[in-house]
Image (tube, rainbow, N blue to C red; front, side, top):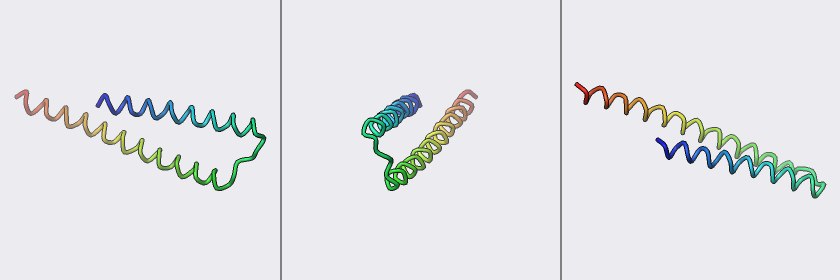
Length: 75
């Protein structure tokens, strides 16, 4: 459970750094974003959002299972 939180934190920091670096690079080179790159970024964003949703659901399920195990073993 704790490892899920660390993974999410690391991924969030990496994604934030990636986007900041990308924007700096685009501004520095004076280039506009390629439409295929934008489409690829949108696809990546959708996949990351799906991953976060699955991760969150699994974390919640794990919590429910842990509570259930505590209840059945405490009797």
